[in-house]
Image (cartoon, rainbow, N blue to C red; front, side, top):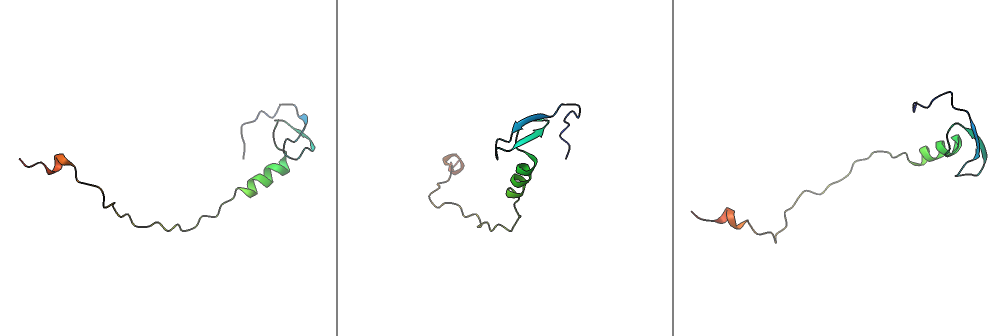
Length: 70
């Protein structure tokens, strides 16, 4: 996945804010291994969700304008 990062940016030396290891990256943030771990942790497998059928509330009264007799 390309983020459109300028390839000519110089690499920065800093500590990963997540694992505190010294890394050399073009942009500040989690290191490659931390990013991969975070991606793997966020994977969700889609499943069937059972949604109950809609049942209107019994305490709702009809609109008075709709009941108006002409």
